[in-house]
Image: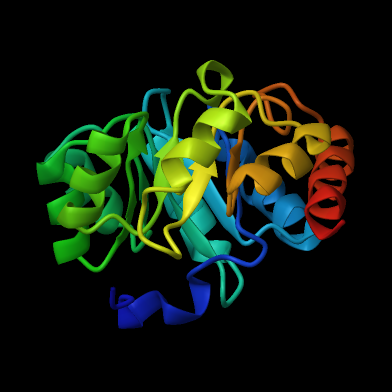
Length: 210
């Protein structure tokens, strides 16, 4: 699959850890983004189902370093894809698979990462043009389940568990076939201090490097 040329240096993110910033207030966006980028994160998403999400995405997009990727989570409609793309952000993460959402994201040169849970959903998402598959909710699928799905997908398919991921659980998921992760509440909550965020971010980056 070809990579959108406008963000080629940002994909895939290295390390492939996506910080999920649910409830990020726009007034904190720049400071939070700086902490995460300084810690080594190269992909950030702000879920759209909280107030101020689009504004926070715009602010992160404006300050992101070269070679990084910013975008939205909980992208459920084509209109949302278009609104996020208008900010310049290029990462579109969904909790589900909707062919129209994936197709429009790809048309706009964005990276679509739909949520899937079954082999049927996985293949449908790949046919639609998904750049990675979000295994969601990961709490409901043990690593053995991911290993089974990975065994029947095309080699090189990007599989990113999301939900309940901790620094301690990364190794087990990677052994089962995970190639990246979306990291939410264990990393960031709206009231997380910048100091606590920096410590958590460091723990995840170090866990990936082990």
